Image 1 (cartoon, rainbow, N blue to C red):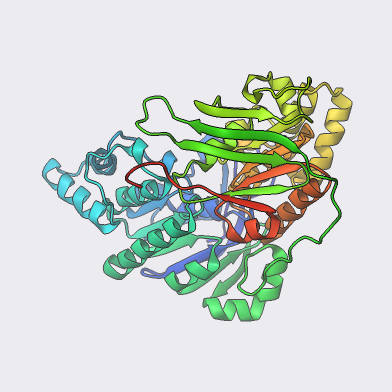
Image 2 (cartoon, rainbow, N blue to C red; image 1 turned 60 degrees about the vertical axis):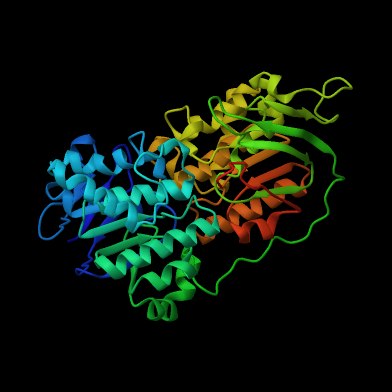
Amino acid sequence: MGWGWRHAGRRAWAIRDLELRIEPGERVLLLGPSGAGKSTLLLGLAGLLDASGGGQEAGSIRLDGANPRRVRDRAGIVFQDADTQLVMGTAGDDVAFGLENRGVPIEAIWPRVDAALEAVQFRYGRERRTNALSGGEKQRLALAGILAMRPGLLLLDEPTANLDPEGADRLRDVLRAILERASPTLILVEHRLDEALPLVDRLVVLGGDGRLLADGEPGAVFRQHGASLAEAGVWVPGHRPLPPPHRERPPAHTLVLAEGAGFTYPGAGWPALAQVDVQLRSSETLAVVGPNGAGKTTLALLLAGLLRPTAGSVVSGESLSIGHGREDIWRWPPSRLVRSVAMVFQEPEHQFVAGTVLDELMVGPIQVGLPSSEARTRAVELLERLHLTALAKANPFTLSGGEKRRLSVATALAAAPLALVLDEPTFGQDLRTWTEMLELLAGLRDSGRAVCIVTHDRDFARALADRTMRLSPTHPAA
């Protein structure tokens, strides 16, 4: 009780003075603004926090009366990104991995593997290659790996965050069946409240300072604290952000043009993306939507000049070309590309290169030739705009998921590109930062920049997009 945790190298505590008791069999939805410590609490309960690595712990945290680090087999955690949990080449071996590490007798392993795969409605056999699975299928497989170990406590950290709406619905159906059959204790972190609330019977809300803000039956909590929770950045039913105001924009012109563009990854038997025609235009927002595995991220990489198309072309419009002809943007050197088109990756860590948040934001401006003093000024302005000032000296890899996302957007903006391509920009954002992200991107569009968003967030696409492009999977079995 009175538990707290401070991550290595950080001044602020992620969790502080937490007094919380969860009884066996309860189903808890854990809410809070970005950076409130939700993931930290799950990691603590899973026994995955260790002060020997430089972190600091206060008070105590107990699982069935014991330190969670000593009873790790009693809790199972599924992370936001299933790729971080899949360690083997085939589905069966991946589910068996944890059982083998726990010393389960070999004759008992495969029946438990098969039962777990059946429980999550995994439609392939044990031999299915993990690198051939969609995002939703990977999440099911990660969940199967946890279920096979039969934990009494199931910890789910935004398990639907990277899934299309249909895939998220299917995963929730699987989870509902598991809860009805096995009745584990559940702690779920999720931003999609309307869909998550039917799965739970209790709501626990953490504040931005890592302390307990509200606790109780969901309906009662929202009735008593709905307005204050929304103000704190918590998604609350009935509190939807307003769309950005209409503003006059400069005339639109084509910055990037894809004609018959396609891409096939090495060794793949079918293209990830086939024969796409699309334009990025100034003063407009293009939303790219579609199910997992439809090639949305591949298209984003092509439009940002980070992949060479294996079919068709991706070229610059006249306003980006040095001469009068079109140019293949994938041929441009980084110093030119960063001024023209910037990419925000789905996994923020893929673009971090510096040791502090402030230094990270200075990389782009310095790369385009700004003096250090001007680069620092621009970085400080972005820190303030995206509520990262208090984290200026923190290592980017120690931030929360939502904070990493805002930093990745800020690093793309730091070089002031003419076009911005963002892959799932609202991933992990609370109500306040979601709204501010919407206003920020709308302001960039209205000032004359081109904005392209790859997203599963229907509300965000409706509020921001001028044009919407829906992709479908090219896989013959999809």
